[in-house]
Image (cartoon, rainbow, N blue to C red; front, side):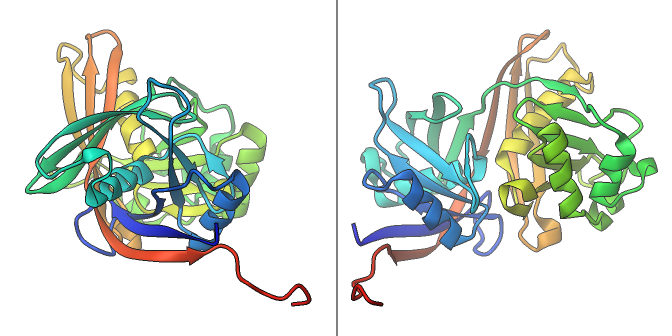
Length: 309
């Protein structure tokens, strides 16, 4: 295999050059893991997603996600990008205004992905694995120092907590604090080494906008992503964070949120989050969004060079 078709798709947006870009390889079955990692490194985006045949009959297809440094178990924006590209190319019989549902095999288990349509444009919605939060295990002053904030800027209503996938959620009082924080990537990597925190979701509900529930920034230097423009796998669990910390009316069973991210990188994007509960516990968390393709191309994998080159 000397070359592959590859797309670059901006996710959680319908406007080019905003949202979160992902590389998408739709026909990846002939690639091995080493080649996938090299392709992701060459693309140098926060994630590149590879679409493959499923390995069991219950799933329709399989997705693998790679940062420039390593494979990860789940990526929200690259999943949105992948299904946008599949719909664009008409894979699996996808047609405009014909909704379809898929079972997707991943390292996080099988996910249900729905492709709906809004104004003839694919709208992708899928469920995230349900995960628990745990108290932050370390010294808050060290965490704040690594993020470049003062401890007084932390929310007084809820403390930083760790999601079981290794994300650390850090709530701030104000939008200004979120805007002006100045992370030290070397120190964030040390927190990864000490506590296996692979991502830092810094968030505030101080939005000044009734249509936006929170603004977020996400840092994962240990995964090769200094700052991610829009992170579906972090915005989705924000609904769980609000529920388990008693910020929601538990007499209600359905909640809809809108998370905003990427504004401080000039790549604004929006994640719709849906929460279903039985009043006592969470039954389902879904995220949804749109995307737009900004590049179609071919990547050369092997060059015909003389042996002595």
